[in-house]
Length: 403
Image (cartoon, rainbow, N blue to C red):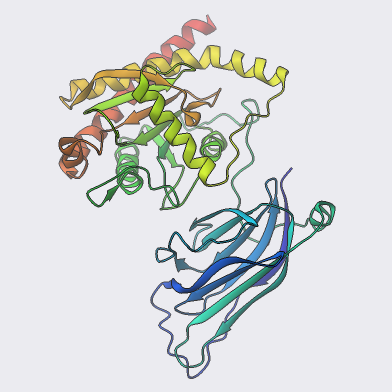
């Protein structure tokens, strides 16, 4: 059960007459003057901001974490040496609710906020935020549970297959999942990151799908922030997605690979490269402090397996349609374009899911294609047409099953 502790809420900032704030610009967090470190048994967070902004602090459990929301700041200047605390398992930054930027501190042990405040420099309008966390007993941490601050949105609670109302608009709901993001940039080559490229590709693809008049679309992330693999599935399920597409452009450390590849879920990887890519994707969650260990009991495992008996053939047909659509468009395909691997992001038992490697950043020609808007437009049209072909065939299959 998710419970929250509201510790400190600041929704307004007084601007001093002599302050030289430029409120038109986005506040930035400065590396110089920002740190997260242990102070005895306490943990102290200092954040240096270019200007004062409204902010709020609250604590969540399951898992235990401290959330700081700012309206709003740019996190890009925080460096890898920012977190020096043993009391914090991981730090993630990015976008929160609309108009808010979020920092999440995952706690290694139960802690309460002992101090939270912001000081504003009278001469230049810059600000210094200090947060002090002190250890508490687990029971004391849980006893402080309260409602979330008004207007704060958290990732939705997973929706069971029978809990979601059927869609009445006749549109195909597509969940587009741009891989990586935030603390996990994915593959990096020649100044390009997989996370940024796939976010741009997904946003363009969303427009292509919407313009067709046949689809509704949700994105698992709409900015450079971290979303755990389980949460991506949760978001798709909450949106009542009919299909889930995870978009990637990986790089191989050894060997060569070029062209689009489409993956479906399997306990056994098609080859060593597939296994390595799946491990790399899951490792990003572990680095961000997300526990991927399954906690399903025996009954739940059986029910999930039964659900996958129905979903797996639909996912396989989806992947086949994607490969056929890309091939019809004359776009480059990997020599073995249909593969399988244990990608955690494909484990939704109730949503047909596929992972599309649009290309490989480790290949110069693929990299050039990914940066070419005309090439991307052809690929996006191919994916749109493949989804339409799959949806039509899937409806025919469903009708035959019902008979």
